[in-house]
Image (cartoon, rainbow, N blue to C red; front, side, top):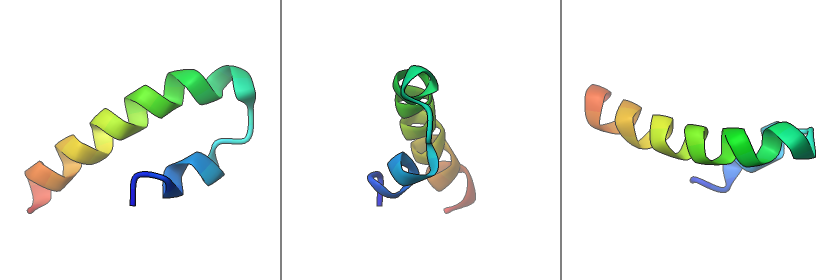
Length: 34
């Protein structure tokens, strides 16, 4: 499930930044909603 957001990120520069941010954001959202 975590690997899905990697396909949405197109740029390599923003890739590293969004990789960590999205992974933490997804975990936070999962705990927040679930």
